[in-house]
Image (cartoon, rainbow, N blue to C red; front, side, top):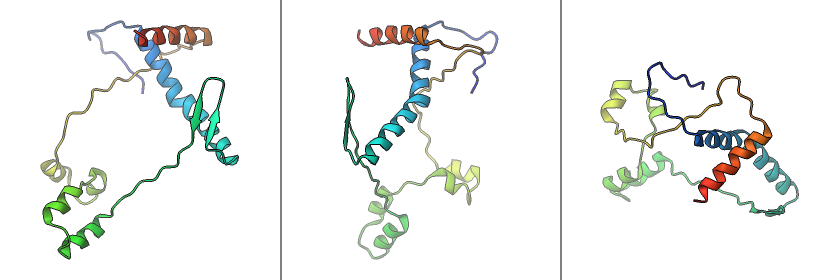
Length: 147
């Protein structure tokens, strides 16, 4: 998403944006690829642990448990749980509900809470960061984090 600053907007110059963008660029593009390759290597070798000269890693499998709403409803219908217990365990995702409810219906029964402000960053058009520049920015970001 290209960010365009509208004319007349208040503009702050903050060099920390360089570090944010470069680190997020690595996090968004480079790190997932590297992480996938390390995981694949570990899985291929049936290894739970890996190491490098500075780091150690542990591969942990994860799972997620989901209770289907229909199964919980059956417990309520059998009087195994109360209505309050049923409702306390349920939440409804907006996207599937929008298939059978109008936007105004969804708005009338929804609660909206304020989220954390988001900060979007982008490289300026035409900017290509050289490795030595990146390392310089990263060095300063790490120094600032240490303070």
